[in-house]
Image (cartoon, rainbow, N blue to C red; front, side, top):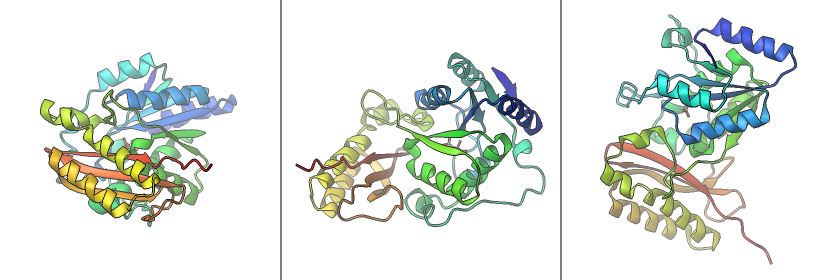
Length: 284
Ligand code: PAF
């Protein structure tokens, strides 16, 4: 696996590959890789001739009170995992390469960015949209891969690429889960053994709300019960537990066939997020 840390070398390599009529898939990450990230690499390898992973812990998507400094970093381990997966190139720039002195531009996606995680973390999607648009323009891949665990992020990035005419196909890949259902996340490392043993309640609540909604139960009652279960398990605060349209993020009271349940809640000092589709009704 080639390791590149500067933008001109990245551009040169991708230009050569594309000049040979090869296709390129990009997997943007912040490192601390787990099986969820590796499933993105696997999908890129299936779809494209070459897979490029990026590792960049992006300061602009963290608020000053958040975990930028303590975010888990282990590049040697990440490199070994990417090599095992047959990744062709790692782009791992430093902060100065991505944000040169005088950097003054930000990309903001209105509407989709404003609810759910955007309400709880107002800085977040601007930072993500800015860094992802830069990574896409630096590498100009054919496709780019993002996990559905960050479902709102995926939709914001799709909108951004479409609005800015960036010629890339943005692909979502299903969430990878631990055996008990907890969505894989680099931040799961922060959980104490006690917190880890109850963390999968988040997914059980999502499934329960999704099933009740599909069965026609009152949405407000199903959500209130879900919040009560999370509180009883020790989640506090709960940023949101909501049912929304999976494309527009409009809040839903009845199923429109595109409903998804979204949750973000804190367990100890760790903020966990997850989401689940409302199962489709079988019409007999
Ligand atoms: O999902 C992530 O790890 C990050 O938000 C991303 C997309 C790599 C942008 O920094």
